[in-house]
Length: 188
Image 1 (cartoon, rainbow, N blue to C red):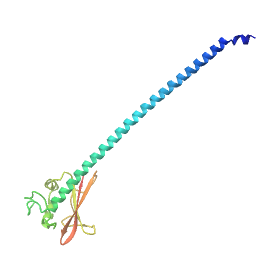
Image 2 (spheres, rainbow, N blue to C red; image 1 turned 180 degrees about the vertical axis):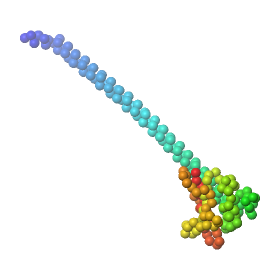
Image 3 (tube, rainbow, N blue to C red; image 1 turned 120 degrees about the vertical axis):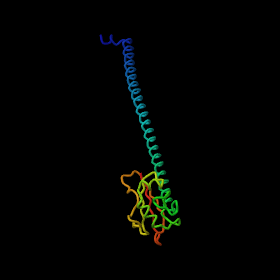
Image 4 (tube, rainbow, N blue to C red; image 1 turned 90 degrees about the vertical axis):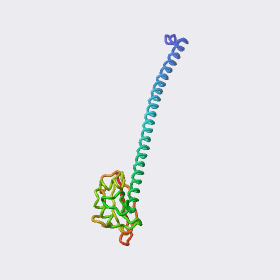
């Protein structure tokens, strides 16, 4: 009987009230945990987005810089090859009188005296006279793509090594009644 006296309607209300309070407290703790997790998640997403933006900005700038260098190399190679295909300035230049190096007669026919003088010229002087901004390497090939010696050596300039970028331009010339290719490589 004493057990029944303890379970009065007031006691039941108290038990229900305590039960509800415990449930509310547990719910609050879960909400706090969920809020903390949500905040951590948002911070992680923010860091990821910032890292992604920095990465794409870096890649875009890198490829832009590469394109600028490539454009400059192409312009330099075109300038060098155009100068060489000309007759030079003055037309009958010598190592003492040359203002602009040209190795042809003006009609794409190689002038042996001019190519020999160009080959014998100091690289630094030739580099300056060609108006080159980058290193160059020039060689000649026949119709079967074999290198040919049209002067004392098979090439003029610095052999490309350890370069980042290399551009090659081909110009068609005539040498001793045969069509040959002049390969101009410009590298950085």
